[in-house]
Image 1 (cartoon, rainbow, N blue to C red):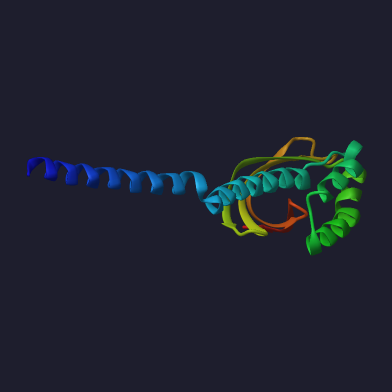
Image 2: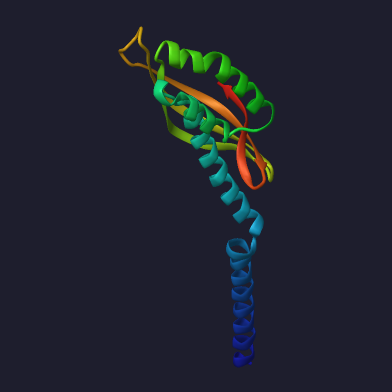
Length: 162
């Protein structure tokens, strides 16, 4: 009778261990939705950070190249808006008044992640100089960067200061 109880107890322990192992494997190895979300979040944060720096960094001697490079990070209506804004405001200011800006991302984190859209909160430090103000002016800001996945790339579709 004692051996029957031990067999029953041992069978129960093996069954419980099997279920625990199956749950652990499912949660860590086979849930591609969780893995995809983590990968998408990381890619979106990286794209928002790189795009933010590209949008906010330019120098008078390379402003044409800088602004063209920034546009490669954009899509949709925001690309149209930025194209017009950069041509009418940024380009003349950089060339005529020797405006130089350099941005760096201090911190960035995903606010929302969906399969084809994301929002990333980006904290930015920016240094600006010009011919009239050669002493560097520093500013800190935060921006909600909206992204859209286009052909497998996260591109900025909105850039909203907070």
